[in-house]
Image (cartoon, rainbow, N blue to C red; front, side, top):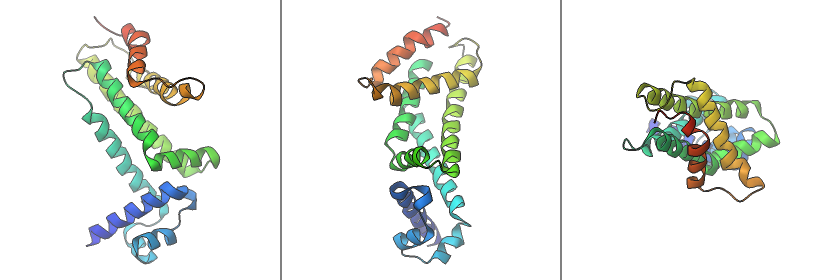
Length: 191
């Protein structure tokens, strides 16, 4: 029963954060959405920040699982990193909570929201870095600094997935893959 209450609180809070943002969400709203008293919320979470962090950790876990699900051991490094990164950025772009948090950060600049968005970005970079290191170990790409290469890939993807379409026709997933193959990956290939 306690686990169900905790999950109910997490779901209601996620919904509230998605609708109103971090700053505007109160424990009163969460208590009302879950039909529990505020004291019950405090039984599971010391404060709103702790609740928020648990939600974000679960969100990051889901995002990483989605990325791992699109990796195919029969594909090469470039295909897999493209598929995984595109999946993570697509998740970030379409997940209602992420949309609201990005909007809140842009409009208000809530410090804890910036910290959480940084945590999401760090998890994406870490994921890519591990894939790069594995590709180097397998001899699939040349020796490079995995952290720098992960950052280059990440910011370039963000530019093509989010910024490019502000002034131009959006690029398809395949077009982005072709651009990366031509301009980035061909320079690191050992073949």
